[in-house]
Length: 132
Image (cartoon, rainbow, N blue to C red):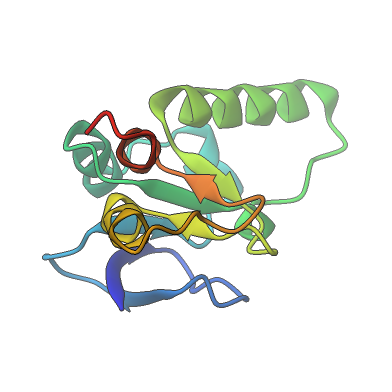
């Protein structure tokens, strides 16, 4: 099983990772964020993983509910957009399978394709397209 650094609470659904709190790990899963954490997100371990090209997933049911204050809701939307721009992949833990580079290599060597609706990391996509 692939090791993933867990930030926050463990997701309510099984995402297919063995959660760890220390290196080594191949991915990062953000299981939950409080309102204040999302607004001023600067988690060093997540930023380091993104800088190293490791996939980072944010479990969306672990996000705070949208506030009734429109200005605050707009700030939260902007914070989520910034995370997406950095390359954080959002998942609800539903039927979409998260495919990492390691899984993509195994699929390619077996001559198989990921399941429909799978979320591919950028490197996994390159591997399956045959460019890496």
